[in-house]
Image (cartoon, rainbow, N blue to C red; front, side, top):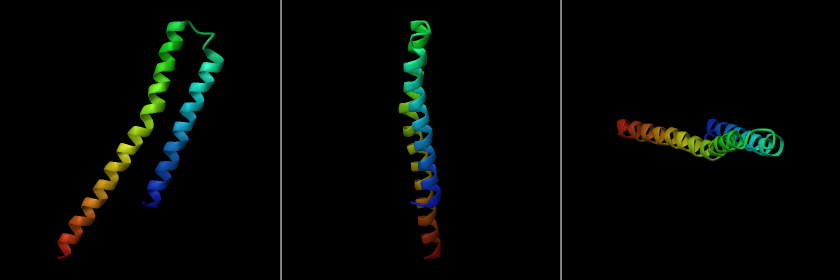
Length: 80
């Protein structure tokens, strides 16, 4: 794991934490103030983002890792 991977991981955890905090804040503070249809829609959208963002970040990291592995393998074959 490279340094840029660690920074991406920390950024992803930070964004996920903020999204989770936003979801909890929304339910605690705004749920009763908004019409139920609007509150439910916003809650579902926030929940999808909280669940989906780490999966998306993992897929991006996996693509970068695979590209580095392929480049290393190609460079190794080129040297031989």
